Length: 172
Image (cartoon, rainbow, N blue to C red; front, top):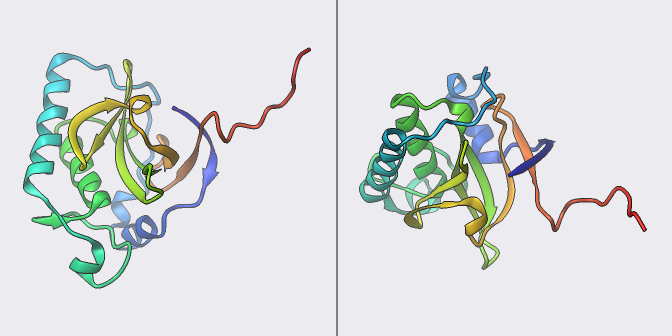
């Protein structure tokens, strides 16, 4: 996944950071991807399945009476709530936040959605509440828009895709 420069933070994440400021100013030291081994992979699969099973889908409007309220869920939540909980549980298991990035995508139907991108030495993988299967990001049918910076949990970067890359020059 190729990222571009800094971009706007989603409003829900901005509000989350105002409430949970300790979560959003963490500067990451290591930029190297996660070295994936079988034990770590098993933990990732276990957390993904557990959160997907424990949390029942419900919109922010149904839960909080407002759009885009990001929070750690206990029993119900929407896509970004699943992501926050997976990120927290994997961090508690010892995986660096620089390897787990909240990512905003567009589903094929045009609806916005949030997933967790896991940066590894074997590629970037997506943890998603819509499926228990963990897929390489390129194997999904999403359009990737932006994600948390791997350098600072409170900053966001754009994601460059073939459809939005600008050609600098053409060789004849």
